[in-house]
Image 1 (cartoon, one colour):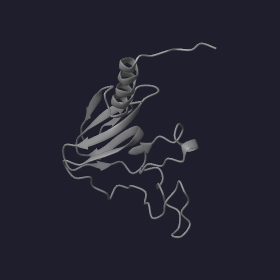
Image 2: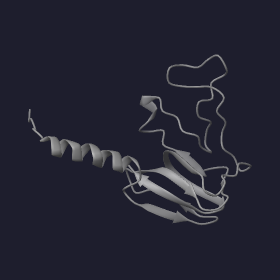
Image 3: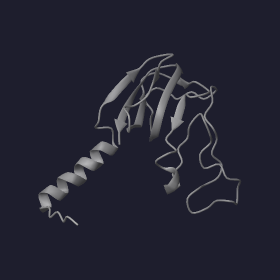
Amino acid sequence: MEVQIKTKKQNKMAITQDTAYSFGQLGSLFLDASGAASPPTGKVFVAITFLADTVFDASGGLVADTTSTAKLGLEYAGTEAAAHNLSDGSETAISGSGGLQIDASNTFPKGVTIYGRYTEIDLTSGMCIAYIGD
């Protein structure tokens, strides 16, 4: 077994870098009306800022990452399934109730930023910047 000893400065830098990667410091992309995009392999979109009123495609428009987060019980709103959609009174320590699936009737207004872990974005209309993270 190998043991690594880090100085306080190295440890602080690692924590700061991990935090930065979680908030989109691995880059971003611009997406315009009727455009589709996926992040680099092994990465996800961690935030999406809308530059105009935006509508996602009903199918495949906002695909939440379910592979790396399922075992943790994390759920994110998307077009493929509703997150936290248990029936009222059936909530658990990791899943809530009342969540709805995003569809083509939902418009995200200009200036709003949403956060999550998304593997695909496909717009029907609008514009956004999607930020890439781990």
